[in-house]
Image 1 (cartoon, rainbow, N blue to C red):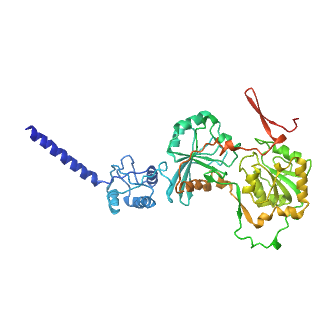
Image 2: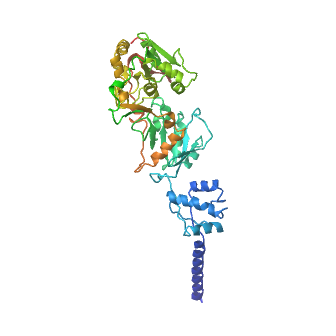
Image 3: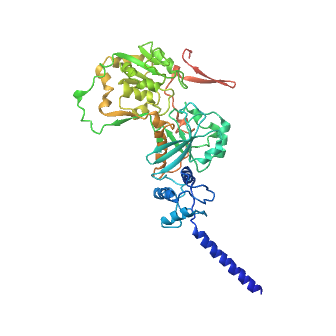
Length: 478
């Protein structure tokens, strides 16, 4: 009797198991990545996602699924999901009752697919003065698209994105502490700036949180993962195409001596305004912009003055222009230098990066390095010597017959624009991509600052009690 009942129970269990298999196979088991859910929701194809029970039109879903299959964006992943009749018919048309959809995660696989990729980026910054817009913003790229959102104080929302982008300064140690604790270990953190390490010092974690590292750097430096310098020199493939007889006499086109176009008077590391005014005691220097008494154009923005035709006509009359950087850091050669070469046909007199950086990056023999001279008097004498010698002056423009200068606009350097965001996507589609860990306090960034300015133009940091002062050495006896 007992054996008979046991036998009946076993038969019933087997029967139910077979029925469950048949019922399960009746429906397609399919798993959706969050991105695909988002696309389907936008198209109003699917009403519910925890358990997908119906679609409004299965035929409309077919090209969407086919596109995901073709792009190889998703991998096979199964889950018990019941479709309505239209959905089942659709899946039957795809020649199998189990559609394979790639569940792709940027946080686990490199590189990104070569096309049709969707990259979610959150811009984390306390600054609000950069081109504010309604977020999120979708940037179409050649090989996919980037969806950029503006992160806020709710750090938990950062887990929803693939890349967290730090592109603005904030001095809040508590916030950095929270970011470190909440960081998703598989998430990419990207550091972006076109400023020098000294100017962008507040863009990186405080030294006590030096263990917070970044996977990707997006700067002007040659050691950055995504390299976007302010400018660069490209040599011509053939130099024989420009006969010497057609060379331009730049000397006779520049009747005036020297000019300085400025945007910010106060600087962090040195007193460049004092430098110019001191040199003015030996040679005439016309001063345009915020720190001078002359103007050109109606805009207060430096870049708009640079490209203004009226400004170009005025500033092309000078033999020398001063390209004085706000800080002296490796490879920091900003638009001040490149604009002089591109727009004004003048010789830049420079202070900024180490001389070897200018020699490596800039066109050959295209600039005068002010720190080469022991005194203002000797620098002024050399400028007057070059200005009075047409042959020597024109020798500084020989590079124009050997190549050309090109520049990267702000749109290539800053993440508020499509071009810059697409560079991130392009980088993440690089073959053999590996995750890096960049310590921005190390020698590759802040730890590699070198000062080309010496003597009276340096600013000295003095701490009295709990207060720190920056003191100019100009006017002091030492």
